[in-house]
Amino acid sequence: MNTPADLTRILDPETLELPKKPRVVEIRTEPYVDSAGDDELRILVILEEATTGRDRTWKKLEPIQDAIFHALRNAHEPRFPYTRFLKRSELG
Amino acid sequence: MPIAESFPKQLQEQAGHLARRDRRKPSQANLRRAVSSAYYALFHQLVEDSSAELIGGGRENVELRGLLRRAYVHSDMQKASKSFASDRGGLPLGIRACVHGEKLPPELTRMAKTFVVLQEARHEADYDLSLRFIRKEVVSLLNRTDQAFVAWSQVRKHPAARCYLACLLLWPRLQGRS
Image (cartoon, rainbow over the protein chains, first blue to last red):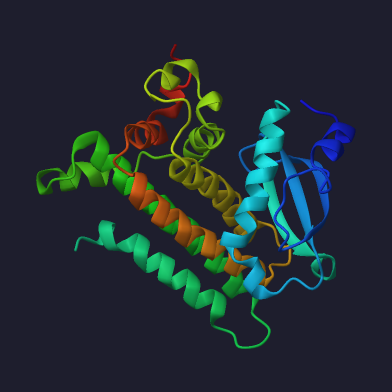
Protein backbone atom coordinates (compact mmCIF):
# COMPACT_ATOMS: atom_id res chain seq x y z
CA MET A 1 0.00 0.00 0.00
CA ASN A 2 1.43 3.36 -0.99
CA THR A 3 1.80 6.35 1.34
CA PRO A 4 -0.03 9.62 0.63
CA ALA A 5 3.27 11.10 -0.60
CA ASP A 6 3.76 8.11 -2.94
CA LEU A 7 0.25 8.55 -4.31
CA THR A 8 0.83 12.24 -4.97
CA ARG A 9 3.92 11.34 -6.95
CA ILE A 10 2.31 8.41 -8.78
CA LEU A 11 -0.70 10.49 -9.80
CA ASP A 12 1.12 13.70 -10.66
CA PRO A 13 -0.78 15.11 -13.68
CA GLU A 14 2.52 16.32 -15.08
CA THR A 15 3.87 12.79 -15.40
CA LEU A 16 0.73 10.79 -16.10
CA GLU A 17 -0.14 10.19 -19.72
CA LEU A 18 -3.31 12.23 -19.85
CA PRO A 19 -5.31 13.52 -22.81
CA LYS A 20 -4.95 17.22 -23.66
CA LYS A 21 -8.71 17.69 -23.27
CA PRO A 22 -10.29 17.84 -20.80
CA ARG A 23 -7.24 19.26 -19.08
CA VAL A 24 -6.56 17.95 -15.58
CA VAL A 25 -5.20 20.63 -13.28
CA GLU A 26 -4.92 18.60 -10.08
CA ILE A 27 -5.43 15.09 -8.72
CA ARG A 28 -6.19 14.67 -5.03
CA THR A 29 -6.24 11.34 -3.20
CA GLU A 30 -7.47 10.31 0.18
CA PRO A 31 -8.12 7.02 2.00
CA TYR A 32 -11.74 5.99 1.72
CA VAL A 33 -13.79 3.25 3.34
CA ASP A 34 -16.47 2.24 0.88
CA SER A 35 -20.00 1.01 1.55
CA ALA A 36 -18.74 -2.59 1.74
CA GLY A 37 -16.35 -1.57 4.54
CA ASP A 38 -13.25 -2.01 2.38
CA ASP A 39 -10.26 0.33 2.58
CA GLU A 40 -10.06 1.98 -0.82
CA LEU A 41 -9.05 5.31 -2.35
CA ARG A 42 -11.07 8.39 -3.22
CA ILE A 43 -9.53 10.19 -6.18
CA LEU A 44 -10.67 13.67 -7.05
CA VAL A 45 -9.71 14.75 -10.53
CA ILE A 46 -9.98 18.51 -10.88
CA LEU A 47 -10.69 19.64 -14.40
CA GLU A 48 -9.81 22.96 -15.94
CA GLU A 49 -12.55 25.52 -15.32
CA ALA A 50 -13.05 26.01 -19.07
CA THR A 51 -14.02 22.34 -19.54
CA THR A 52 -17.28 22.13 -21.49
CA GLY A 53 -20.11 19.64 -21.07
CA ARG A 54 -19.04 18.04 -24.33
CA ASP A 55 -15.62 17.37 -22.85
CA ARG A 56 -17.16 15.64 -19.84
CA THR A 57 -18.73 12.72 -21.68
CA TRP A 58 -17.45 9.39 -20.44
CA LYS A 59 -15.66 8.84 -23.72
CA LYS A 60 -13.48 11.86 -22.89
CA LEU A 61 -13.08 11.06 -19.18
CA GLU A 62 -12.37 7.34 -19.48
CA PRO A 63 -8.77 7.79 -20.73
CA ILE A 64 -8.07 9.79 -17.56
CA GLN A 65 -9.54 7.07 -15.39
CA ASP A 66 -7.59 4.42 -17.31
CA ALA A 67 -4.34 6.34 -16.82
CA ILE A 68 -5.01 6.48 -13.08
CA PHE A 69 -5.83 2.76 -12.91
CA HIS A 70 -2.73 1.93 -14.93
CA ALA A 71 -0.41 4.06 -12.79
CA LEU A 72 -1.79 2.61 -9.55
CA ARG A 73 -1.52 -0.96 -10.81
CA ASN A 74 2.10 -0.38 -11.86
CA ALA A 75 2.75 0.90 -8.33
CA HIS A 76 1.17 -2.30 -6.89
CA GLU A 77 -1.53 -0.26 -5.20
CA PRO A 78 -4.23 -2.74 -4.10
CA ARG A 79 -6.95 -0.21 -3.24
CA PHE A 80 -9.75 0.46 -5.70
CA PRO A 81 -9.76 4.08 -6.92
CA TYR A 82 -13.20 5.68 -6.72
CA THR A 83 -12.73 8.59 -9.07
CA ARG A 84 -14.76 11.79 -9.34
CA PHE A 85 -14.28 14.47 -11.98
CA LEU A 86 -15.13 18.01 -10.93
CA LYS A 87 -14.12 21.61 -11.53
CA ARG A 88 -12.89 23.70 -8.60
CA SER A 89 -16.07 25.77 -8.77
CA GLU A 90 -18.14 22.61 -8.24
CA LEU A 91 -16.41 21.51 -5.05
CA GLY A 92 -18.81 21.62 -2.14
CA MET B 1 -40.54 -9.83 -23.69
CA PRO B 2 -40.39 -11.05 -20.07
CA ILE B 3 -40.02 -8.26 -17.51
CA ALA B 4 -36.61 -9.54 -16.36
CA GLU B 5 -35.26 -8.96 -19.87
CA SER B 6 -36.77 -5.52 -20.49
CA PHE B 7 -36.41 -4.14 -16.97
CA PRO B 8 -32.73 -3.08 -17.23
CA LYS B 9 -33.46 -1.05 -20.38
CA GLN B 10 -36.48 0.56 -18.70
CA LEU B 11 -34.37 1.55 -15.71
CA GLN B 12 -31.64 2.90 -17.96
CA GLU B 13 -34.20 5.10 -19.75
CA GLN B 14 -35.73 6.19 -16.44
CA ALA B 15 -32.30 7.27 -15.22
CA GLY B 16 -31.79 9.48 -18.27
CA HIS B 17 -35.27 10.93 -17.92
CA LEU B 18 -34.79 11.81 -14.24
CA ALA B 19 -31.36 13.36 -14.77
CA ARG B 20 -32.63 15.69 -17.52
CA ARG B 21 -36.17 16.28 -16.25
CA ASP B 22 -35.67 19.62 -14.48
CA ARG B 23 -34.91 22.41 -16.90
CA ARG B 24 -33.00 24.67 -14.56
CA LYS B 25 -31.87 23.68 -11.09
CA PRO B 26 -32.22 19.91 -10.93
CA SER B 27 -33.70 18.50 -7.74
CA GLN B 28 -31.39 16.36 -5.65
CA ALA B 29 -34.15 13.74 -5.47
CA ASN B 30 -34.25 13.38 -9.27
CA LEU B 31 -30.48 13.25 -9.62
CA ARG B 32 -30.16 10.73 -6.82
CA ARG B 33 -32.92 8.50 -8.16
CA ALA B 34 -31.26 8.70 -11.58
CA VAL B 35 -28.04 7.30 -10.11
CA SER B 36 -29.98 4.62 -8.28
CA SER B 37 -31.90 3.60 -11.42
CA ALA B 38 -28.67 3.43 -13.42
CA TYR B 39 -27.15 1.12 -10.83
CA TYR B 40 -30.18 -1.15 -10.76
CA ALA B 41 -30.19 -1.28 -14.55
CA LEU B 42 -26.71 -2.80 -14.44
CA PHE B 43 -27.56 -4.94 -11.43
CA HIS B 44 -30.61 -6.53 -13.04
CA GLN B 45 -28.83 -7.05 -16.36
CA LEU B 46 -25.99 -8.88 -14.67
CA VAL B 47 -28.28 -10.92 -12.43
CA GLU B 48 -30.39 -11.95 -15.42
CA ASP B 49 -27.33 -12.91 -17.46
CA SER B 50 -25.69 -14.66 -14.54
CA SER B 51 -28.73 -16.74 -13.63
CA ALA B 52 -29.24 -17.66 -17.29
CA GLU B 53 -25.59 -18.63 -17.51
CA LEU B 54 -25.75 -20.83 -14.44
CA ILE B 55 -29.03 -22.67 -14.99
CA GLY B 56 -29.96 -21.93 -18.59
CA GLY B 57 -32.01 -19.18 -20.17
CA GLY B 58 -34.87 -21.27 -21.51
CA ARG B 59 -38.56 -20.87 -20.67
CA GLU B 60 -38.47 -24.09 -18.69
CA ASN B 61 -36.20 -22.36 -16.17
CA VAL B 62 -38.18 -19.14 -15.68
CA GLU B 63 -39.31 -19.94 -12.14
CA LEU B 64 -35.94 -21.29 -11.10
CA ARG B 65 -34.20 -18.17 -12.46
CA GLY B 66 -36.68 -16.06 -10.53
CA LEU B 67 -35.74 -17.90 -7.37
CA LEU B 68 -32.02 -17.71 -8.08
CA ARG B 69 -32.19 -13.95 -8.73
CA ARG B 70 -33.11 -13.49 -5.07
CA ALA B 71 -29.83 -15.07 -3.99
CA TYR B 72 -27.47 -12.39 -5.38
CA VAL B 73 -25.76 -10.27 -2.74
CA HIS B 74 -24.78 -6.72 -3.69
CA SER B 75 -21.56 -6.73 -1.69
CA ASP B 76 -20.44 -10.09 -3.13
CA MET B 77 -21.10 -8.79 -6.62
CA GLN B 78 -19.07 -5.70 -5.79
CA LYS B 79 -16.13 -7.72 -4.46
CA ALA B 80 -16.12 -9.97 -7.52
CA SER B 81 -16.29 -6.91 -9.75
CA LYS B 82 -13.39 -5.22 -7.95
CA SER B 83 -11.30 -8.28 -8.61
CA PHE B 84 -12.20 -8.41 -12.33
CA ALA B 85 -11.70 -4.63 -12.59
CA SER B 86 -8.07 -5.16 -11.61
CA ASP B 87 -7.59 -7.30 -14.73
CA ARG B 88 -6.32 -10.89 -14.76
CA GLY B 89 -3.58 -10.19 -12.21
CA GLY B 90 -6.19 -9.13 -9.66
CA LEU B 91 -8.02 -12.46 -9.77
CA PRO B 92 -7.53 -15.20 -7.17
CA LEU B 93 -5.42 -18.06 -8.53
CA GLY B 94 -8.23 -20.58 -8.91
CA ILE B 95 -10.33 -18.16 -10.92
CA ARG B 96 -7.33 -16.97 -12.92
CA ALA B 97 -6.82 -20.54 -14.08
CA CYS B 98 -10.27 -20.44 -15.71
CA VAL B 99 -9.50 -17.29 -17.64
CA HIS B 100 -7.13 -17.73 -20.54
CA GLY B 101 -4.89 -15.08 -22.04
CA GLU B 102 -2.68 -12.51 -20.40
CA LYS B 103 -5.37 -9.88 -20.06
CA LEU B 104 -9.09 -9.79 -19.57
CA PRO B 105 -11.11 -8.31 -22.43
CA PRO B 106 -11.23 -4.51 -21.90
CA GLU B 107 -15.02 -4.60 -22.31
CA LEU B 108 -15.22 -6.88 -19.28
CA THR B 109 -12.98 -4.76 -17.06
CA ARG B 110 -15.00 -1.73 -18.19
CA MET B 111 -18.22 -3.37 -17.04
CA ALA B 112 -16.67 -4.51 -13.74
CA LYS B 113 -15.29 -1.04 -12.95
CA THR B 114 -18.57 0.61 -13.81
CA PHE B 115 -20.49 -1.78 -11.60
CA VAL B 116 -18.24 -1.03 -8.61
CA VAL B 117 -18.41 2.72 -9.13
CA LEU B 118 -22.16 2.76 -9.68
CA GLN B 119 -22.88 0.64 -6.64
CA GLU B 120 -20.94 3.07 -4.48
CA ALA B 121 -22.62 6.06 -6.13
CA ARG B 122 -26.00 4.41 -5.53
CA HIS B 123 -25.14 4.01 -1.86
CA GLU B 124 -24.18 7.67 -1.61
CA ALA B 125 -27.27 8.74 -3.54
CA ASP B 126 -29.58 6.87 -1.21
CA TYR B 127 -27.88 7.45 2.15
CA ASP B 128 -25.37 10.32 2.16
CA LEU B 129 -27.31 13.56 2.30
CA SER B 130 -24.16 15.58 2.97
CA LEU B 131 -23.16 15.20 -0.67
CA ARG B 132 -24.48 17.48 -3.40
CA PHE B 133 -25.02 15.75 -6.71
CA ILE B 134 -24.20 17.79 -9.81
CA ARG B 135 -26.13 17.19 -13.02
CA LYS B 136 -23.05 17.16 -15.25
CA GLU B 137 -21.45 14.52 -13.07
CA VAL B 138 -24.63 12.43 -13.00
CA VAL B 139 -25.06 12.69 -16.78
CA SER B 140 -21.46 11.58 -17.20
CA LEU B 141 -22.15 8.61 -14.93
CA LEU B 142 -25.21 7.67 -17.00
CA ASN B 143 -23.15 8.05 -20.13
CA ARG B 144 -20.66 5.67 -18.57
CA THR B 145 -23.45 3.22 -17.80
CA ASP B 146 -24.64 3.32 -21.42
CA GLN B 147 -21.13 2.52 -22.60
CA ALA B 148 -20.84 -0.32 -20.08
CA PHE B 149 -24.01 -1.85 -21.55
CA VAL B 150 -22.55 -1.61 -25.05
CA ALA B 151 -19.26 -3.13 -23.88
CA TRP B 152 -21.13 -5.89 -22.10
CA SER B 153 -23.14 -6.80 -25.19
CA GLN B 154 -19.84 -7.27 -27.03
CA VAL B 155 -18.17 -9.47 -24.42
CA ARG B 156 -21.08 -11.31 -22.77
CA LYS B 157 -20.29 -14.69 -24.40
CA HIS B 158 -16.53 -14.54 -23.84
CA PRO B 159 -15.24 -17.29 -21.49
CA ALA B 160 -13.89 -14.67 -19.09
CA ALA B 161 -17.27 -12.95 -18.98
CA ARG B 162 -18.97 -16.28 -18.29
CA CYS B 163 -16.54 -16.80 -15.41
CA TYR B 164 -17.40 -13.29 -14.14
CA LEU B 165 -21.10 -14.14 -14.26
CA ALA B 166 -20.54 -17.26 -12.14
CA CYS B 167 -18.43 -15.26 -9.69
CA LEU B 168 -21.18 -12.68 -9.20
CA LEU B 169 -23.24 -15.28 -7.36
CA LEU B 170 -20.56 -17.60 -6.02
CA TRP B 171 -17.75 -15.19 -5.06
CA PRO B 172 -17.54 -16.16 -1.35
CA ARG B 173 -17.27 -19.82 -2.30
CA LEU B 174 -14.90 -19.39 -5.25
CA GLN B 175 -12.48 -16.66 -4.22
CA GLY B 176 -10.47 -18.87 -1.88
CA ARG B 177 -10.19 -21.86 -4.24
CA SER B 178 -6.75 -22.57 -5.63
